[in-house]
Image (cartoon, rainbow, N blue to C red):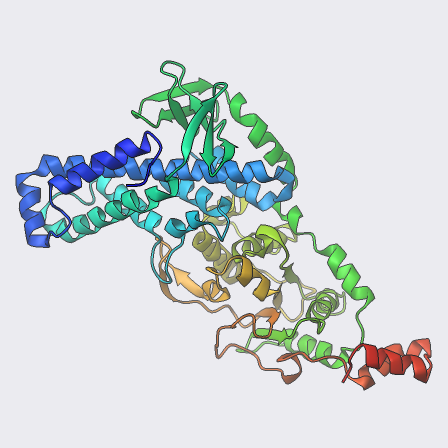
Length: 499
């Protein structure tokens, strides 16, 4: 086995020794039932070793990814990221699921550390499978009895995979102490793990942060060697991390998504799209079963400018249709997960969501971190809570997302079709979801860079699928108020490669 840092190597060795001793590699269910009966204590010890190793891998891996992310930039760099970190560490008592979320939102897409937290389509990720089994086994929903043999076999396989494959992420690394602080050393890079990994006051061993308890007055840490716990009065160790996050979030995490400058810029240079503009406005101001409008083109055809103009026109006092909008850009705002945050926050600020449901109000005050939980909340808001104002005579709400291809490049595991499913409490798809016909969706993307899902809800408008370059007639009409010379118009048409 490749060299692993202590104490992880100790946990892995202990599990593998017991796994080998019990000869589990080729065991079938009948043999496992016999083993569970004759050597129940040995199987239980195997699970304790496997659960210990896997929990350490999960929590230490999450702390390492979090520490790397915090080392790379400032809290102001990405307010959404900071909100998710605060939600999962400061406001909650971190569970295994919280640590998995931290790992997921801080780990780069191209990192080998993503494999264990990336689910295959329609399945749970390895880390989710571990968390599900651990919770059911620890709480007694699964036990060493004959009727649970298949679940026990799956649990053993999951632990074996996590312990022996995911642990290799730590191969050749080191947890190094220097000046009373711990660092993660990987390929010559030294990442400070303070304050999430600290020295124990009695034994000097590394203790990992567990959460803030008793109304956030007491921090608890647990030894990664022996499981002993320590408590710290106050949260002074963490305020250097959390306080800048809270300042970045002051006034709402949605501040990171201010697209007003982009819309203003596009408006200044928007010309020659009267036909396309009218087609979208006509569709948006009516109700029909085809309430999803894909808009695509090659790069540079003006999708963003067209969408910016649509946002302004629909919001005009005469039409007065409310719009939720998002332009994908760089960073985590590319994520379809982040876009949902933005839509919900926009709607909240504009008082679109009318409800007395205490559960929904609680979620609005503290948005869920889990992607599928956020989708479920957005469905509830659209289905139950959107109430058109009296000035909105159509009763419609338009939701615009520009740049699906950019979202797909940064976060390919998320697809817009995710938004149109219902999910159970485990995040598994149950069936399709359809919004009311009064909810109008507009999605734009570059042709050839995104495969939009086919649906009988998709609206077909020839001038938008694809959106082509301006025609000579459109250019002449757009510029006629400036009374340009024929030579100037000719040069504009030539240089702009206008058809």
